[in-house]
Length: 272
Image (cartoon, rainbow, N blue to C red; front, side, top):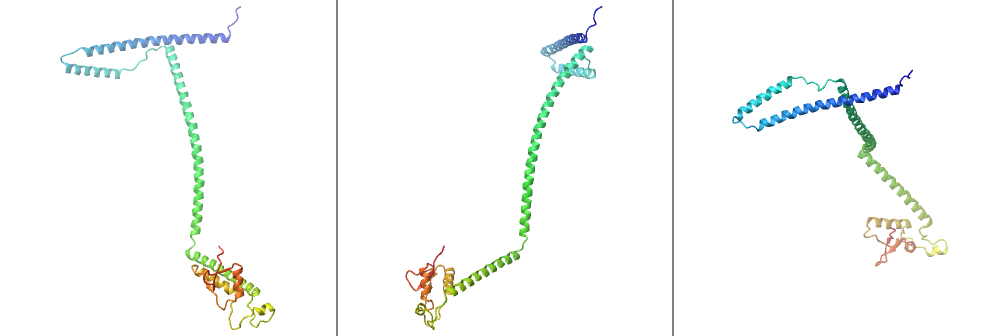
């Protein structure tokens, strides 16, 4: 009793038979194609020979050829195309080959489309990032514009009033400083006693009561005002109202300086 053939052996036989049938079908199809190609060459040769034969009545020949070609065209249009072969094996082999070729083309198209899609995704991501950055910059600019508009909504009157208030505060602060300076100078640098009462040094510095001396604070104020009002001519002429010890003290301490040509004139030293 012989053993039954295995499934693998049967599959190999079926594959071999399928390959042989496909090869035979291709051979048959090639033969039919060669026959049709030979017929096509024969017709082409006849057309070439017909063109080389000259005819005296070329116009009539052209008309006859046009009529013949027109009637042939109508026949071809009415004719239904038929397959070169009706063999199922040939049609199956040709169909399988065409489907494989089409499948390969579609795979290539799919690969190209996927690559283009990936590139477009990268571009889209980059554009979205750029859009987000531009949106943030636009929001920042809009906020700044809104803030500036709110600040500019203040009227000129309010700005003027604010400036006046600041000037008044500065004047008040300056007045308070001048008062403090005057009080300090009056306390530590008083005017001399016209009667000469007190110590020996004070009696030596006593002055005529008829002369109306000005205080050290007023001397400094005159020098300051003269420097600010007429900086081109900042010198102040000293007279009997300027007590000489105070004038000499200002000169020795570098607060004031004399005129290079007139010793009776002094000016406030430049501190800048």
